[in-house]
Length: 281
Length: 279
Image (tube, rainbow over all chains, first blue to last red; front, side, top):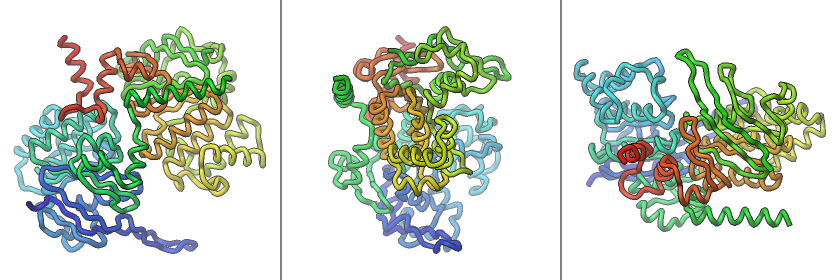
């Protein structure tokens, strides 16, 4: 089966301009990454800030072009520098950003937020646009009467639902999610993750999910790619990576992830007690 | 042995549509050298109650309490001058957004020296040397170079280290950390938490950690207060809380952790409240 999205040796350079005292230089943010995602699956891209994971996400979402390498959407080579992505491509790939406070225009009503992708990319008549937007609001767990409200009237979790709804208006096959739950509280995070899982089942969506939180990745991913300093240091199925992380960087990530296991807490509490007694005596 | 005792703290905000109660009768007590975690989601009043202790709330807020004592001193009847001697010296605070809590137009060296000058009366060379000692203590590499850096030239993790250095400059006995690692990556989070715990143990500081992350609680706290909509839901030793949570809200929070997912779906807090209501 043709993968929904495939990357071959993707490279991205950023040019840092020089000044009187500093020479201009090129920074290679992504250093030749290969990946492919099958329909209905979730690829999680894991790494810390500066690893190049967001750069890669922006390339997959057709926002930035790769400097070298090839990006294929449904088996078709895409070069956004040669031709701007038109409505056909935009309705295949959509993106949800990390910060739901920054990604919605505060002066735009929710209805306009949701219908705008249709206005730009399709010739769906106004009445149908409205109906579709209302239906989408319900689908992501909001109310049709939210249509005429502004973003500031919603909580962070609700805004992220709106951002997801906007991304789904064009019925894309691929959704690129850049840290979609990092800015949310734990219980709201669970709701949004559930929503994403439901939508994936219902609409057969393919996800590229960027995150630094391994516990979230373990819940949502089918395939995992760990990247560090622009290179994919480990790639494999969720089971493989979590059962047997081989690269030192992956192990370091695991070691840094907080453990909520009762035995681990018991051990820590005992250690602290011992340390205190040692000080007291 | 109690360092901070608060009883029946109520914080109300005057809004256009009437009075809003953000904190509704919270009790907090902290022993010397203890680590207390206050857990809750946004809107639970966890930050507001600690900002009330620091006196950092805006004028629209009314703070009342039956008791608010720090080290045997009554904070409710204190004059402004007495309070200012306490806040920023014996009680200090660090915030969630390290980059936003530093002043972008001054070097970090200037900002830490300012604290040393105003609070400890150090000046010139003495202040510089103490500042560099503090930078070393919080693990900032090349402290001499970094003193000349502006906040935007440093990473989030390093800015948080600077904030911690400033907060411990006066050897406080109580440090309040409001979501100190929420804006940071897991690997950096681990480093910052390890640093806070090390400083806490070395200096025997009391530490109040405000967070929504149960993982952070599991890794740091001695005792935990769970707050929801301005009320205390539960208070327990950390091990008891994870082993045998009493309040339904705590159980909901714990089961919402992705690593505790059993089936395809994550239980959410509202699921839990529905279940409780159905019973």
